Length: 526
Image (cartoon, rainbow, N blue to C red; front, side, top):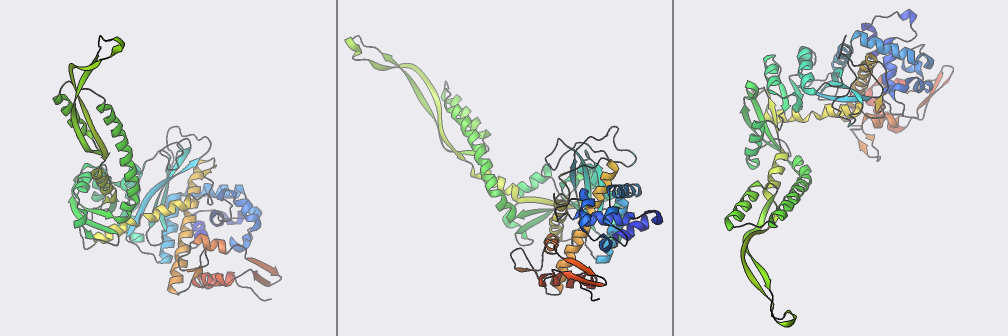
């Protein structure tokens, strides 16, 4: 992918005075950043003590050259150039080399936590983000954090754009700004037709602004919007058209945000099955609370039947998770003990006092209607687009675009794997933190590219690679491939080179990746 060379073309530096160029330093951090040998990115100098750096990084680059000072200054250089702009160029070159083409660009955000104190007074300035507390996706609200916005393409999950942001930035504010600044690049360079995002993108203002700027979007509609609630309540699942296996849908038009849109109300069998148990537990818990309230009501005494019936009617009207199996209002007569004058109390008897009270009796059971309504609500969701031409974007394609959002979510899971970075990073400079976020996104770019090439090549050449159980597969993860390539060594005797521990299982991977890889792993006679 020529990442190192491309960086050195962009960043001015005196190569005669440097033992390691910025591009080589980045290459070293990316190679180490995969982290699958339990050496995290911030331990790069120690990692390369046992690695043939001249073979991997460049001629004359020795492990001692990859020290914290060299790597730190490289991070400073990346910041000074502009990490978002530089990454955008590297991703464009990668996409061009791979020949990837997708109609959908998937946008999302995540956060990274940091220990230590950072000066965030006065807010961001001079392009430097603030490391501060904000909404934590890691459930660590006690830690300062930075936010990372990222856009990936659909086919390989290749990140094409990244932007570090201050820790208190929310998605609804950052997404439209990122799209607006880079939409022309996304359309012209990568050929994206639609920007896909979760419901954070969707608001009346954003919908209107995106449409005015000529941006076509695909977005989940928040369930809190009144019109969306009504559409879901009115939806008839049985009458919906089949979209793909496990999905049905029906289209309607909306003018939310004064913008004409197509809304696709989607039913998911998988979502229904996933929600079934949680719905049962939720209704049961609500029912138990209502049963306690009814128990209190049955202990009240009413002066007349009308009062008791009115209280029962009001209680029933307020029920959400329960319904009556039986109910009634009964007359309660009060008695008093009339003592007899006979010796020993013989002849004592109960006598009506004349006071009459009315009581409520009944039995509550969980509401089947409540269960059905909740299950329906959790089985349905709405996807919106301002692409009104169904020939350009059919309902099936609209659903596929929405489901492709898993690619960016998968990328974030990779970035936050503790084998890539420590759970909380310890970099002291906000500038270097911004550059480090670019480095780990480059790690994802290389990882996604390699995994896509391996899988595509195995399928194209009808080859396989053994999975964790030893069964042949054409879709191994790059992580598993990395682990299976550990323990391969090169032994040099003069001009002779022997590659040790090569196994038959390695051959299919080298075959699909091409001759260059084959040469790297080949022994060389004297």
